[in-house]
Structures are given as structure tokens and as C-alpha cells.
Image 1 (cartoon, rainbow, N blue to C red):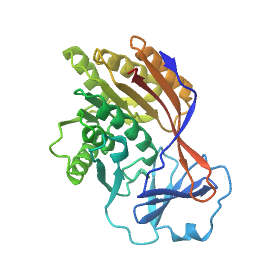
Image 2 (cartoon, rainbow, N blue to C red):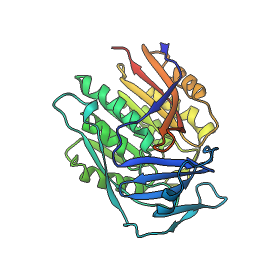
Image 3 (tube, helix red, strand yellow):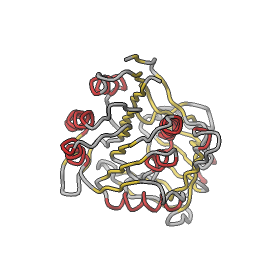
Image 4 (tube, rainbow, N blue to C red):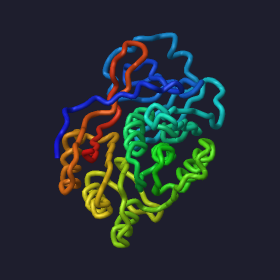
Length: 306
């Protein structure tokens, strides 16, 4: 197995999203036609813009709780609105893959999409489209389903797992909006660790795995997820579900103090029996204003050697 240099992974093809500016612990973003201000503790510099911040449709006001707070609306915002992302450049020459999905404000400051992770959608959808074989993908902590839809659009069979019934319903609405209802997607509301452990006992195998675990979470029956304590057991169960010819594995961690090096080393353990290469680094977004890079998450990803 070979390791690649530390990488700052940037998505440059968004049309419906932009990081307009950041600074003073905040970020100014455009989602579709709406502009939002959200907390960003890593924006340890002064803002570059002024009047543009006054044009925001809503500002998220956090509380002391994890992800707690509320939206302060300055202008009218629809209950939900459509956004798009074009996967086509990542696919085969004759394939088209435009993801269409619903965005909305939520109590936890998020809006239904993490734009920076589109760099991973491009990567694994390209691997799937070029594989020339049936690829079975497992997407864990699948949220609103955009990674699931990217994999399905590229030709994979996908099992999507999330503990939130509301998120899975939202994901299925995104499937319909993207005209991907005929794609083979299995939607599962379950505790992620318990589900993967059951799959391992049943002998179910996957060629690709997508893991986007939260820092903290709860399963449908109150099961507690704490990433530092729970991730090792999940990776062990995932390793038992790998096929004889895995194509890719990617893990992304948000809001944690872990380094990408730590995520890479955990993945090395998981993939030690397979010939491939590992890349690790940070998912970053570039401002439109001063062109600064804002780090959003750490990641590690493995792909099989051709």
C-alpha cells in the first residue's frame, strides 16, 4: 500500500454554492439565491467585505449547546429551495449526472448539504463509472443522500444508512428530484454500527464504502455514538464487509480535533490486506473575496490500484 502526500482538497465546480467571505469567527455563504451567515471558529482573520454581510437573508445565532441555536431571518426565505451539482465531468463521456436536491434551514445550523464534500463525490463517481463492473456501495451516516445519489448516478447499487428517519425521507425526496428513482438504492433507518455488524454476520459484501460520521449522535433507539470511542468498532465491522475486490473507501470527519494523519492510520489498518493507495488531508473551500482557504473537515480515502 502506498501513501500520497498531504492534500488540500478543493471543489471548484459549484455554481449554486459559494463561500463569499469569512472572518471574525463567521462565514458568509450563498446557497442558491440566498445568503447566510454561520459561525466558523476557524475564521481567525478580519473580513474582507462589508456591505455584502448586510445583504444576508439569515444569520445563525448559536447557543452553548452542541450545534444548538436558531436562525435570525432578515429577509424572506422559502421553506425549501432547489440546488444543483453537475457530476457529468466525473462520469463516462456519454453519461450525465446532475444532482438536484432540496436545501432548507434547520435548527442545527446546517442546510442539507456540505458543499466541500463534493470533491469526494467527483472522485468516487469517477471510479465507479470507469470500473466496468457492478459496484455495491455502502453509505454510512448518509444524511440527505447526496453521496448516495452521486454513486447511484455513476452506476452503483447503494445501501444508504442513517439513524434519522427525517434525513432518509429528505434523501428520498432528493432522489425523486434528481430523476434517479429507478436506480437501485436501499434506504435504511438504523443505528449504523449495529447495521454493519449485522451485515458482517450475514456475509454481505461491499466494493465501496462512504463514512461521514458525526462527532456525537444517537441511533433510533437511543444508541450513543461518540466518534473517538465508536469509530474503531465501526471500521472493524466495515472491514469484515469488504468484498474480495474493493474499489474505494472514504472517511470524512467534521468538528473533531483528530488529524488527517490519524484518520489515514486507522484506514491503513482497515485496508492492510488490499493493494491500493491512500490519500489524506483536509477538505477546504476557497473564498471569493480574499481567496483564503477555509478548512472544513479532515479526510482519508483509499482506492484500489488499477
